[in-house]
Length: 145
Image 1 (cartoon, helix red, strand yellow):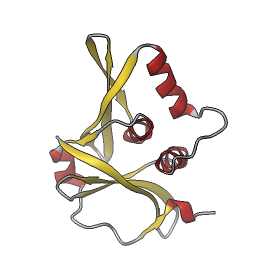
Image 2: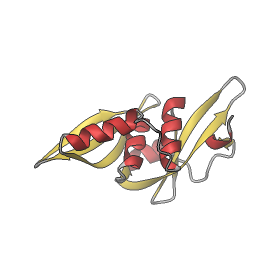
Image 3: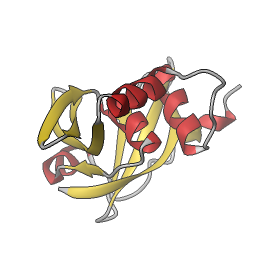
């Protein structure tokens, strides 16, 4: 597993539509773009910019629930890619047991940024979907209005 950081949230424009993309940068320098929904993009973007809403949003609520159940998010693992769909797990430690929760990468990343905790990517995922350089056709998510 390789440690990855959130490089940013962007908008990919195509001829027909625009789609949010979260971009991870693995410790080996490879870039992993993951297409996500607008709500998840906004959640990740707000966490990256330390914006605290007046009331808890969904990912804030999840973090609070885990904490109140004496759990601690240890890490997030993006470990598979099947038919263009990425798969992730949130690893929670509660007392002496480790609990793995199946989750979308976008939700996992939004939670990881709030804790904070490490994000890991399986090298096989990077082999299949990673890039050496940042795609040039991305616009910063914060620039949309």
